Amino acid sequence: MRRPTLLLPLLALLLAGCASAPDGGRDERPDDGAATGTASGTADAGIWRPAPGTGWQWQLSGRLDTTVDAPVYDIDGFDQSAATVAQLHEDGRKVICYLSTGAWEDWRPDAASFPKSVIGKGNGWEGERWLDIRALDVLEPLMAARLDMCREKGFDAVEPDNMDGYKNTTGFPVKAADQLRYNRLIAELAHDRGMSVGLKNDLDQIPELVGDFDFAVNEQCAQYDECADLTPFIEAGKAVFHVEYELPTSAFCADSRRLRLSSLLKKYELGVWREAC
Image (tube, rainbow, N blue to C red):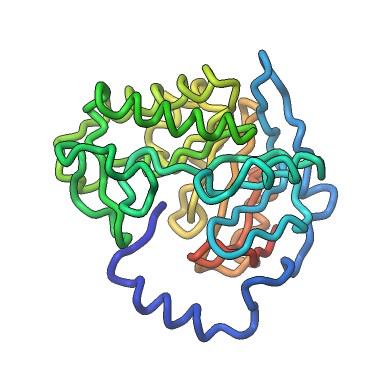
């Protein structure tokens, strides 16, 4: 995620004091038929590929609300159970497994399995550090085990996060070619398990990676005037799941509809609250 380190304490205070949109309630603007699309998308050898305009809900914190009117849910792969995934499937939803594949998180149950040699600098979030994605011999079995977990819980797809370390200060001399190799490895691992996979941010490498990934997940492309960079996914018939945190919907929804993005306004903690375009 694009998550600025220095602003987090201020953001926390602002979010805590925001009474106009309490987290934990239903979203204020349910998707209509044009914005929602369908969860079905297309399939190739069992791989689900959501179509442009497909509605979604992204919730990574708080008690999961399974009643939000969206055909796709993106939820934490470790925190949520197979029973929750099954319930969402019963309601006709597709479910994406959120994982951090480019950064180490000290609270995950497999954290001790990562050797210190592959753990680098912090990425701006407490308890998280960049991984040395060049070390494929170390990381491939660890990530394969995480993707096995997603498959065993019944997820349809994977959202691998922190997949643009080469553009950040990781503590390792990671190059663009290293990132392409690692991102393609994660995509291959997901596909081998019958799951689709989304490219998270990493806008500069979209031309090289659009064929390897089944959809995209983006944060703040409107704020940074980058949304047009995601066009290759739309042109390939693949959804772009997009979220803004700081702009009002009036500032980006018209462009999102024109570009056929699946756009939401969310709070940084990614709780229940959402406002859909």
